[in-house]
Image 1 (tube, rainbow, N blue to C red):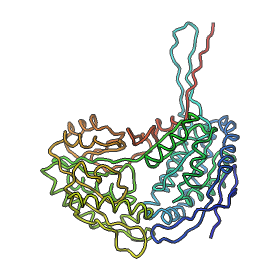
Image 2 (image 1 turned 120 degrees about the horizontal axis):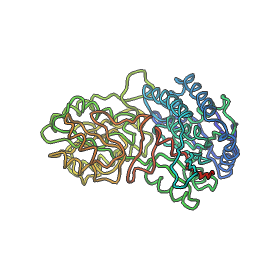
Image 3 (image 1 turned 180 degrees about the vertical axis):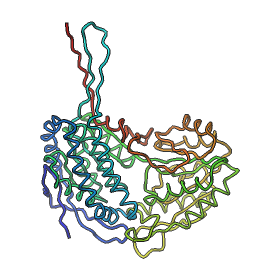
Length: 477
């Protein structure tokens, strides 16, 4: 079994003897163990990033882009192997794991393209002979704390914009899925990337994670994960007034009006619910369907969900989903479905742990007869469960959609342009999808409201999250 080590200052080493076991959620098999890093290890990683940052910032951005492209090329060379690692430790079906690897490489290249597009501003002065310049500069040292659901892509989402803008970074992968990140570090080590620019430490949130987020020499913590952990990160960062960028999940509503294309709507809803076994923060978590088409839409959704195929994520068969990440995830889904059943909702398909020999599999599930008070309509399920509630009109749907602590994504299915634009005006979410599944683009801006987070990622606006402004006032004669 491979002995995995942290990647700090351009080389692999383990400064601690404590280890964390990594398991395959489809079989329960132990895959490897990784370091459970201590405070001294975290200090070493941050110090390495701090030492490397000034020289990295002085490089022309186009040269930094060259290093990023070397990394993306390495990922493409090892794409199939990387996809298998992701599938083994996270339970993602192989077709989706391959998409994740390809999208990660594309994302790095996309951010590298910003090298010649990073811009400041020339401002108009009130004083004769004065010139005002607004410059964008790197923050310094960035810490990226990763989730387990898209563990490989999130490396790039945090690393690529940080590095192209002149920051250095320390990445901490989830203890559930560190192996793909360690392989990423190995491939990066085979490029010409200067030592200390990219560092990776493994560990648990309460250990290495806390040490990273409360460290006085960190300039930005960017985190994707749960609300509770996001709150703890804000608390840890507060004494140093460290900036935070947080994506903290969602309870995305999907509104289906009576003029919608029902087949398109059903396909999009099921795709959005089954991708990565429902373990996606931006995908549809609750449906509000207009009364006149409720039975017809529900029948189509139930038919598609019941036909979904699941099992060994490494199978060559085209599967729709694999297992949930762990027993805690499975128990959470089972409890929320049970609470809906107890509250009077109807389980139209699924509703049970899947009858597989091994792994944390749960049946694709559709629940009808839902009401706003039910837990399944309020809490993030993070599993292959789709609750449906009937509404009378768009106004009622929007009111119920907005009645949540979350504010990440939303969607509407309609042929009526006025209805679609009304939804865009009144839905209080960072994103709205019209007549399509929930899934963002790298050139957009993926940002939530309310308890779904602070700041955002992707595109120009995500890139500039990794910079700070410096205004220069230059008086001339």
